Image 1 (spheres, rainbow, N blue to C red):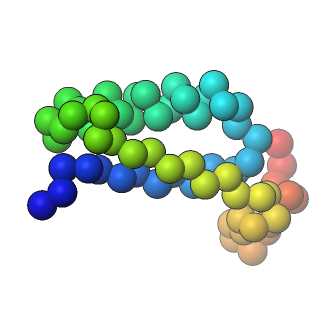
Image 2 (cartoon, rainbow, N blue to C red; image 1 turned 60 degrees about the vertical axis):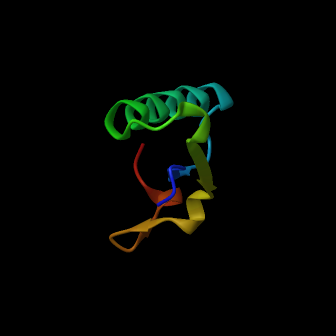
Length: 66
């Protein structure tokens, strides 16, 4: 069994690099704590989704109320 956890996180585009860095650090910390893996083996992949590619209840994210 592999000791390299890979976490994929889908987000609407617009998050800053700093926000993603902080989120990746938090996810990594939890995986180290819960799974006992080496933090250098944790891979976090961010997928920035264009708002027009996300639809909820038939309404594209570009039309969601802010």
